[in-house]
Amino acid sequence: MKKLFVFAAVLFTFLSNTVEAQSKKVIADKIVGQVGDKIILRSEIINTIADAKRQTQGQENVVLPNECQVLESQLIRKALLLQAQKDSLNVEDDEIEAELDNRIRQTIQQYGSKDILEEIAGKTVYQLKDDFREAFREQKLADQMQRKIVDNIKITPTEVKLYYSKTPQDSLPFYESEIEVSQIVMIPKANKDVEEYVAKQLYDYKKQAETQGPKKFEQLAKNYSEDPAVKENGGQYTLNRNDKFWDPAFLAGAFRLKEGQISPVIKSKFGLHIIMMISRSGDEAIVRHILRIPPITEDEIKETTDKLDSLRNQIKAGKISFAEAVNKYSDDDNSKFSAGSLVGRDGSTFISLDMLDKDMIKPISDMKPGDISSPQIYQDERGRKVARLIYYKSKKDPHRENLKDDYNRVAQRALEEKKTTTLEKWFKEHIPTYYILIDNEFTKCTELAQWKQAAMSAAEGRKQ
Image (cartoon, rainbow, N blue to C red; front, top):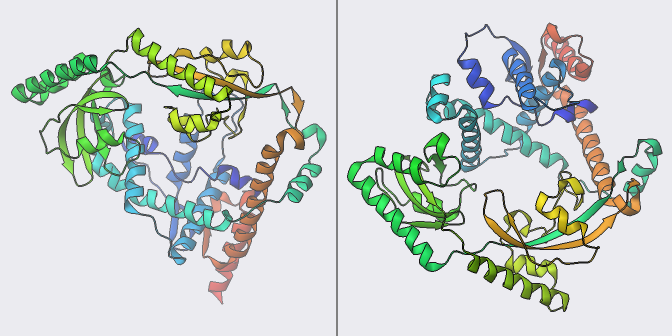
């Protein structure tokens, strides 16, 4: 059962694969597994593997799950779901809707537009959401049950040392040189006169669209909007009132509108918008917007760098710590709540040099641990000119993993192993209590030994 947790995330197929399947000829399906009253279809196994192939296309050294492993992960999900229902766990509707919206949005981006998605699927977005709502609810409940089993598990320093001592030295990972880097980011604010000029342009677009209709709004969006996605979607988005993905000001402004109405100019963290409400049903709406970003002049950039320079002097004088300055002044949402630290894929604050953005590599190469850079101007992922201070906190030389330098990493692995062991024990105790069915097609799967034994026991019990 060890391998099964590698595929814990592969618990149900992605929307895009099912959309593709719906557009093709229907093939006879069959039940290949069952836990209690929860069934697993052959198509679910096929689609999950196809999705894994699509998600990892182009990546090297990828080990894809086989059919036995996917069926095992599905059996796990069903068992967790049954226990979640037995324990009266609950998932709020708004959480399901937000997850559905995110998945629909990703799929629309994949296919290019909402219209193309609906044409391929043969269903509207609303119908697709209805089709997948129960599957998403099952997934959330299964995840919640798994967290209930393992979330209170802690790891002690003694357990970490024991885990480390059992790992062969030649199996310990080798780390190249790594550094800890933090930053304070400030986004220059546009001059008020410039902002008012851009707002007037948006009010002119609003007047034209109100006079000439929705087609004019779409044309204006394609011609003038500075939203990078406008070429693909014409400025159109599906919103949910409870979705945390959207800027709060943008979301609030949109949901104040009636169908066909165009908003006044709304200011968000992205720039200035006008929004047209296309259609709305409860907490869900389809809108179109035009985004304009007021240009920044050299005066605003200098004003921002002067603020950062003054802040740097305060930090160096000990009047405020770097972490406090991040919390109070930084505009970077990604690092604001990690004291400005850049974080690696494994959650560690130690990162390799190749993980730095290209504009940070040069200043870091001229700094020593403990240094704070002068204000640096660079272009962020949205193409904006942004200013920042860089704090080169510390450096680790190339080394074999050890408890002194890498305690947090070792502790995390030890904790995950302890959680896995706890889950394995839970399943060993609970599998015999469920009705289990596994199709003969999977009788040779060694991964399913415990499940097959439970299925045989259940069958024998029914004969008596």
